[in-house]
Image 1 (cartoon, rainbow, N blue to C red):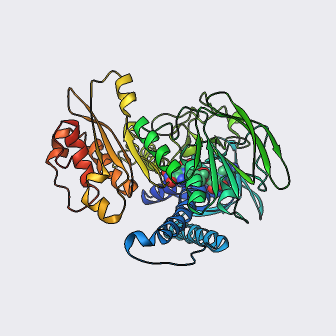
Image 2 (spheres, rainbow, N blue to C red; image 1 turned 90 degrees about the vertical axis):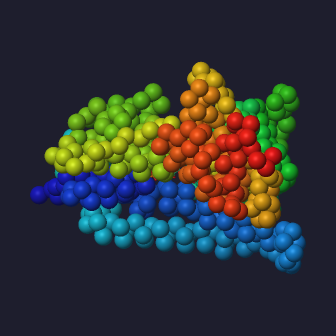
Image 3 (tube, rainbow, N blue to C red; image 1 turned 180 degrees about the horizontal axis):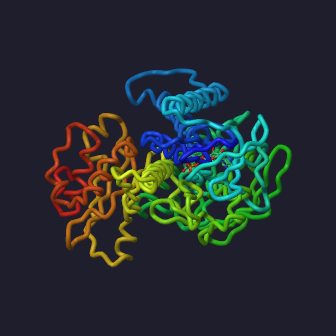
Length: 471
Ligand SMILES: Cc1cc2nc3c(=O)[nH]c(=O)nc-3n(C[C@H](O)[C@H](O)[C@H](O)COP(=O)(O)OP(=O)(O)OC[C@H]3O[C@@H](n4cnc5c(N)ncnc54)[C@H](O)[C@@H]3O)c2cc1C
């Protein structure tokens, strides 16, 4: 007889495993199905191992600049294998952590590839053969994978996706990064700090194009100062992938084309959802216009009892967004199964922070100044530079700024945008504020600890109203 559950979650990334934990917390008999590693892309191939690599690059950078702090460090070298090994070790530790969490919450783990064969029925093919599981509800959390260039598929030799870039066997000598979203820029920053000659090519007219235009401009200046070559409004074509190099024609914004040879190339042009071969078409589950699975605000697809969350549904494609959707879906399922005490909370898309861990870091939440104006707001914006902040100067990190965007009529905080040291840790202050529908008045009246870089958040609020104190 088939194993039966209240909920089966297909995919164990930060969407899937969190959904499973919440379902189990609510007393539902829960299973999770995973074909590769518990923890999904985020823990094993995404958020976490990249941050471990970037930490090594940061320490390396600081060691090289030890003199700035009155210290000396000589003959500083990087052991690429050891750097990668540390990153893999961190990923493994977290993967084991998820294994522990599954056990602790009494969630049954089925390792294998899952496919929906009927509403409430999931076939799993793994090392032990094929089994069919049954559940009242199934949550699809199959995530996404790197998008390939059609004419130069990643081979792990010269052309890399993030998986190859995370586990290099050799240090590139001359690296091309195509795409300047968070993933592309983080790898560009890592390799640049490790001493590689890095060129970034971006099709749009600025790097990190989803961020506020001021942040893009500041980052471009900083990365260029660090020795990176940045080409915006640029195109790549005529790629010739050889055994030892890849030759690419780059057309710059003036229309000048040049063939350039690189030792390696990272393709970071976005992701595609994992929606193939999991039985969606046979069950009539509808995609949205970008071929992600279409859902309502709670994760329900158009087929009763089948839910979807995370990178396989609409964006932004971020781990914390996937986890929030996981909790919402689990609670909505519990509610459908009769639990009257849960109150699922759909995601408020205006308040999802985004962080990029390049050097300097970027963090933002809500609308950029341009988007707020486009949306018809009369805007009050304020900017405060890190150079006016005592802690940033003491840390030797005076490059950066915080920008706030308020609705001039109501004082509502519409957006906040930061670049500089530690901003990925600070943004949450604004996210909490936005969730509580804060206005400039509460932020102005909040006491910020001194000395902290977070004081720039206070100052940027004051600056929007012409009241900055240290500028
Ligand atoms: C290099 C990189 C860096 C990133 N950095 C960040 C960051 O700093 N912050 C951030 O918020 N986000 C980051 N992300 C994005 C983040 O990793 C994703 O948004 C997140 O992992 C999505 O979670 P998920 O649960 O939807 O899917 P995933 O994490 O992709 O997990 C899906 C799981 O489903 C499994 N699966 C798929 N199909 C099947 C099947 N048929 N049967 C069984 N199992 C299946 C897969 O093996 C996988 O384990 C990064 C991504 C990358 C690639």
